[in-house]
Image (cartoon, rainbow, N blue to C red; front, side, top):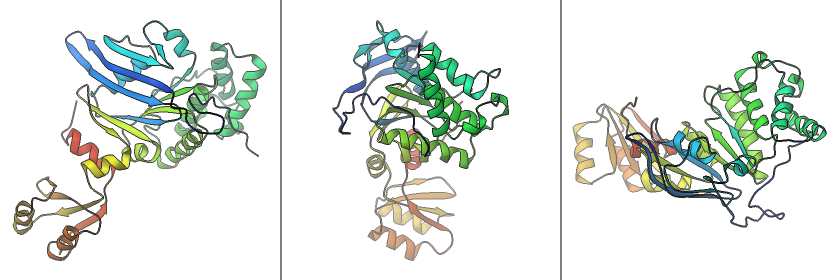
Length: 322
């Protein structure tokens, strides 16, 4: 039977019930770089055992928030606490309780898979015998046992990403920060990572995720917030955000006719006009959907459920960003 890594579930009691301990709490945090304000008065909280998502387009302020959370970049103003400790004065104590899986590959290419795990554990003064036990558990959990003696350069992208996740858990963190953990992976590798993260979620580990994959956030996150231009523009559970900012049902119509546009305007239908395509937001199996299907879907129409990508694009826009 495959062994599982031990996880300290900060804020989760032995019976699995959450004791509502705040793992992360920020109040009006600001981050400035000269005249540029990257984060402008952001306040949010993450409870023990939550899988929390942080979304936003490039340049929205996500990376700045993440770097402030683990003490890499100082807070310009505001209050930021992790495990109830002030990041300004207790960042060393906070870091010993964090696991961080960065977007870039930071594995040591001169070491084997197993050596990368053991060396990382030593950074946290983990006893050698304990480190070997943890390494065995991580190798099994992330399906890397048969690659223990391989060099990092011999691994596929998916294996390297799983190794980075395994390494971030070697010190048994109470909070795991995941910075775009599946960027660049093929679908099979992405789902393998999702499976491991879902297993950690069930064990009660508190996790904070940044990602550009909306299906990833929708699938994994209990709750999330979307930031843009340094401000929070939406926060809540994925399905609640979809209902509030998009719809349960979406209709995409290619080459919309003047008759359709007149109908939409007359009935004040919530929609987006993209020129050669119109996106209509409607209630699932409601009257509007039936009318559109019968009167205006003679050629090309797509009926689908609303999703988090609809929310993201409605709130942040569809223009390209540098």
